[in-house]
Image 1 (tube, rainbow, N blue to C red):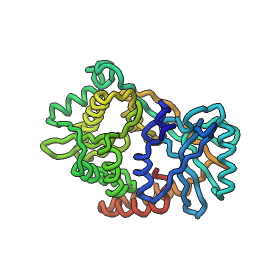
Image 2 (tube, rainbow, N blue to C red):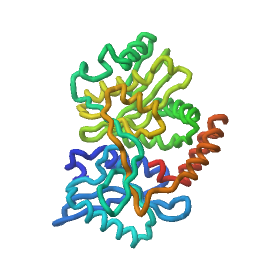
Image 3 (cartoon, rainbow, N blue to C red):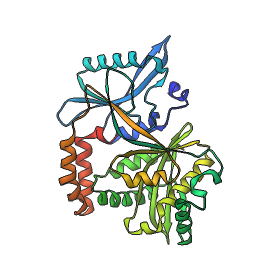
Length: 332
């Protein structure tokens, strides 16, 4: 932790609180692989090992969309990777996914989507949402005129309200949902320790949109968002994100990490770009080869997603319990 605290580019993804959140649900154990000189860490990264669907052990790094997988001295990246690949052989780990574009002949890189960031340590007028000519700003004003109000929360009721919306959102998308326990852990480890906050947007006391944010050093990360599909015409997500940015400025964050956007999610990509986000290609690196997961994608597209969309909400929750048990590394 002393080393991580000394690295300005380290985000919440390296913080023990976040590791406890993502590992607790599946009883995984985070590990650090480091280069050490004179009993001091020079460089390193965090990773998690678990068994995949076939029974083989897989290693996945925990850094997400910030492209800062290896902290510290990056000049010895190849040496660090060579040592890690040797460690994999010793531990009988068959595959590794490095969530960054590592320029090395030892591994294979693959373009997986986009990363989006918004600079927020500037004047209110400089942020896209405050410009009266933008669609984002018009949507914010529309929400306020319709009587929507935002508030910063840190209580269990807000988490329960978020989870109810999250299940609705995931059901609409045909995607399995995490357990309520996962988000209660998020509340205890992130929100109540001051490492994040909840933003809720309501109309007449009814939650329409809720976002969960976590921050460390200079970067605030937008981790989870959910909204009521029946009230999207009020544009509650725009007001929720705007309230989050204003709170982030109060807490002196400089950058908002809007997270990974997959290629096929063009609607989400447009939403982020509408805020004036900086977009960069997002690559992951793999060893010994790129993953061949087309079968699982087809199963999800043709069978899992339609079933979840057309079933009661408990099916979405049950599918989440099964998916997180069978494929824990896909969801960290």
